[in-house]
Image 1 (cartoon, helix red, strand yellow):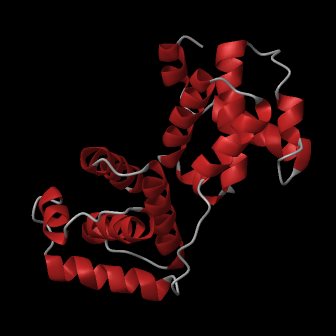
Image 2 (image 1 turned 90 degrees about the vertical axis):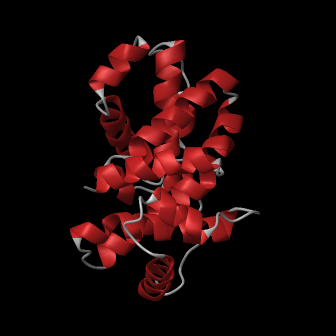
Length: 198
């Protein structure tokens, strides 16, 4: 069910034209809330929208209206319920809302590696795919970004691009942890990889 809510949040994010960091923060808040306690299944969409609303307050200059968020939820919750869910999120997470997202780390790593815009675009796509994977939720943003960037380089430059040893320095667990991430990222979606021509 988490993947369905995250997929729906991605669609809402695109529809509203929000910044990329807003989406990653919203998914981080959702995962943090789910780790901290249980949520009734019929309230998962409300939790997702409330996380997006909190993330908008952190990242956006112009906030979406509560009423429009309720309409996007097909009327399954009211404005009062959305605001109450926002208070619960803030309380349960003890106002710990800051999260350096993987997009920031991707930008830094891409600059260090001298990556082309096309490589960075593919890496961003792989980061978005990782949002749907519950397993990737616990990884540090820098490790996710490094795995996505390496996978994009492998796809566009070939397996022997020589980039990966340079990226090892930036991983928190060294070469072994990075290789574990890389093997996971390569198995992310074999069908999607075939569709891309890998």
